[in-house]
Length: 196
Length: 89
Image (cartoon, helix red, strand yellow):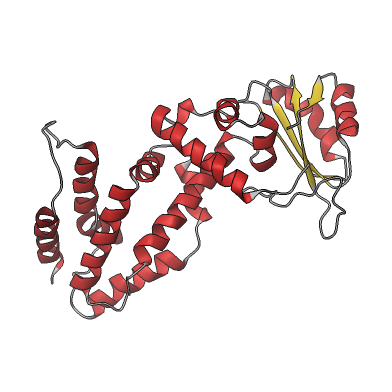
């Protein structure tokens, strides 16, 4: 029929992301996407065999962009406090600057497709993060603990503050905006907890 | 994930890869009906991959082929007792 037109694929994926953010995964269908993007359903099927394939490709693409962003300016050889502060800054800024993308990636966690996405990614990002983690333990900057416990202490507090910020309200429904001071205060508590 | 990333048109000479994707509207509503077309499509050497999107209202049959034209695929599906109509841009 025709060559893969990357611009067209990008436009379709962008539109799909908008629809998912506005109406949830159930709000997206190949037919609705075709209508919204002003193309025929046949065009979409040339690139994606079904809605699942499209959502998976979108997730992969968005994660790759996110990983690339948070590796920028980061070096796994940094001392633990500097490295974690760098990670916090870039993760927070990405989510705050790209609320729709972040919303989609977070929602994907609750989609049954999540299981299928596990083996889609390259190893680079994981290797960099493992190196940072392992080296910090070797240098006695970090307590040794299961990786999930480490992640939950090191990053989940940040993700939750950003979530409040994005929503504009806290857990009690009161107005909330994240400040740099709060971010640094939380980071200091996290570093204290992780120190041997 | 998507194994079909390279596509070529009829017009463009198949330099490296003559694969193309054809898309059809069908009335193959359920996987239980798909089993009647499976042996026919699987038997075609020129078909690299095919899928039916049962969730879509057009029950879209998507075929990646190296030489069959739309008419030939429509005939296969009609032979199995279903409707099949090429969707174009």
